[in-house]
Structures are given as structure tokens and as C-alpha cells.
Length: 195
Image (cartoon, rainbow, N blue to C red; front, side):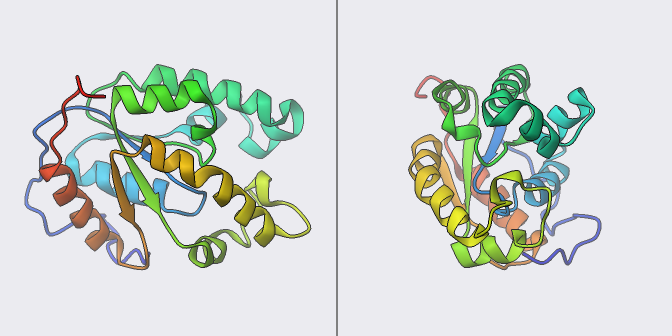
């Protein structure tokens, strides 16, 4: 995706949704959850929360440091607690970490408390976006491409399981992607009792 809109504005005039249900973004690292989530929240006049950034702010250290000290299990425990806390807020756009779907309790929270959008991207595109990012502890291996493939294989069925909507991020400009997402959400019939 190319951020061609510095302000994040889209051509949608005062978009709104017929519900205040939280919107949860899931998908692999590099899929655009933070970038698109921030722009989508701005377009809808909603609060944006990046779960990894909330965890970092609460702990006072980067996610990579939490992984070093507590391991993935320690980080995942913190992630579940933060997700549970924020998932009850209306009018929210929340970007989860790529592995948030691994825990069954997280999948349950996501499916029952909001509208889940799986931001899907091809492996080549994901790798291009994250290959040089040193803040991604799970791909700091001898062969990050192989590790990315393993993570995709493990997580894709889980993303599909929780998703109410699937959106392919591709390489469209941010403003265009947000406009498409807003239209998708406006036509989505959300029945909280059906989750």
C-alpha cells in the first residue's frame, strides 16, 4: 500500500456506520493493520488502538524486549489481558498483533465482541514490507522467509475462522483502501446476537 494521503482523508463525505460495534483488524505482520487501522479510524471518527503499542506503553519496553525476557508465552498472556480490556469499547478500531489469533480465548473475544476484518496480503508482499524490520521478533531468524511461510501456514486458518470480512490489502493507495473498507462495513449487516 502506498500512503498517498498524508492527512488520511478519503473522498467519503462524513462516512458513518449503522452500528457502534468495535472493529478488530487481524492479519499477518506487514498486512497493514496499523496503517490502515489508523486511517480507517480517522475516516470513521473512531478511536484507534494498536494492541502491541498499548502493551509497550504499559510495560515501558518494546515488544521485542518482552519476548526476550518473558518469551512468547509471557507476551501472549499480556496480549489476552489487553484485548479483553479494550474489546468492550464501542466506536473503536483495534489492530491486533499478528499472533493474537493463536489463543482460543482471543478468538472467542474477537468473534463475539466485534466485527473482525482479516487484512490479507500475499506472502511476497508481506516479506517485502517486513524483511528489514528489526522490531519483528518472530522473524529474527537465519531464514526469515521460511519463518514467514511457517507463520502464514499456521495462522491463515485462524484468521479465516475469526473473520467476518476479508479484505485484500494489495498495493492500492491508503485512501482508496480505506474507502473500500468503509463501503464494505457500511453494507455489512452486523447482528451481535449471531456471533
